[in-house]
Amino acid sequence: MSKNKIDITENVMSKIRTEKIKMKPKWYFWLGSLVIFMTITGLTIISIFLISLITFSLKSHGPMGAVRYEQILSSFPWWAFVVVFIGITTGIILLRKYDFSYKKNFSFIILVFIIAVLLGGILVDVSGLDTLWMKRGLMKGFYQQYGDSHQQKWNNKNKDNGWRRGNFQ
Amino acid sequence: MKDLKKLTDEQIVKIVRTKDKEVYLEIVLRYQEKLLRYALYLVQDKAKAADAVQESFIKAFINLNSFNTKMKFSSWIYRIVHNQVMNVVSKYKKELPLFENVDLDSGKNPEIDLTKKEIRERVNKCIGQIPIKYSEPLSLFYLEEKSYGEISDILRLPIGTVGTRINRAKVFMKKICQKIK
Image (cartoon, rainbow over all chains, first blue to last red; front, side, top):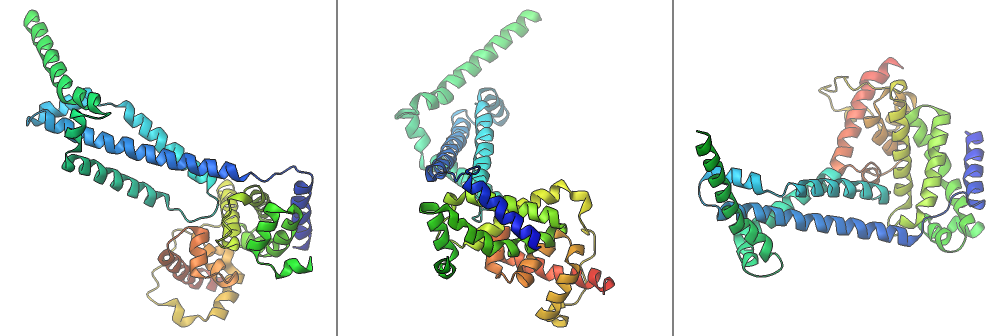
């Protein structure tokens, strides 16, 4: 044990003295925390927005379940899933990299995140914010696209398919 | 150097960060023996334990600015050693003892049969035979004399889970370590 003791002390201290190892500056950790905070905030906003978009799309396309489902599938912004996946992975990597000691339960964080997002999305739907966003504000164009234009696109696509089928027969 | 002995770990960390890196020696001296013992319980190999502890001291120094001096330094450094040891364990998985399939249902409360002193003696004898999942909280509690709260910080487990694992570790000891007697 005593041999190890001497070796460890000498090895560690000689690396410090010769500056083979250097302390990472404070700003490095501040920057890390900032990036993590921004990633989580960004992800939450994107996810709430997506959930509200799904419920909005469901409301705006009438009561026919199967048709609505197909409409959502055809017009759903699938790229957002890739963004969310990359975001969550980056967030966890950053948390692991920057966090050295403090108790963080990753499964709990993800669970809280999912619940917060679902509640946020439902809240946007219940409060009628999505309808408001369709009429005014930054999201106006996007919501209108999913509210009106997709209905029109869907109708045109069906018309087109019907014509082709008719031509075929 | 005499004055340093009176200072807390957290105060020493502040000096290392702002004034004198050489003071880090005091941290190394304070902790290396405890950490070596802790690592040795888990990896059962002096060279690997020493490597893990040395690497932990280096990592701790590099990341010293991320340490919150309002928290406990000992939990922080033990956590780093824990991570380092877990890397070693996963690297040499086949060589280390794993008895995950042992039946834990003894039907008895081991607390009744064993006093803290007896447990400490037994832990010392046969900790290498118990799966790390259970031996680690056990060694931290009985040998390193950490509180449930500190163990919870080091292992990032809820306090209730720490208690459960310690109790299961005692059952393991009864089942496995009796053979070593």
